[in-house]
Length: 125
Image 1 (cartoon, rainbow, N blue to C red):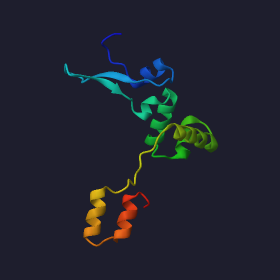
Image 2 (cartoon, one colour):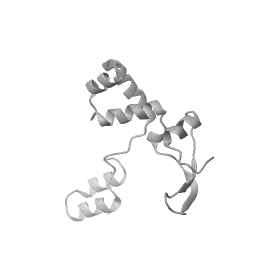
Image 3 (cartoon, helix red, strand yellow):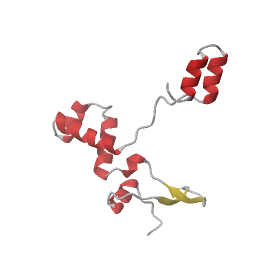
Image 4 (cartoon, one colour):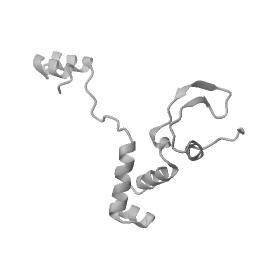
């Protein structure tokens, strides 16, 4: 392989959609390299076509009507593709459980009862 950088689309095409692990990362413009087992970002694991679709969706600010216009397809087609891509992606929890320290601090301040604190610490929120 040459020293020229390969972009994610080339890598995705090369792997044919099969899972892969990146084992070496070199910082651009330096001799610093890091070796290990790095899983590529979820979006980089999508097919090139799905990456283009997601990029267009973000650039359209989520407007399905605009996506219909760009891709020349119907609303159900856009929704179907979004649903399929959604199934491929893990979503980050946006409301994580409070830390033990947070629960104890709230208990000390009298914001919650001892029973509520125990329930939160047990994960029964």
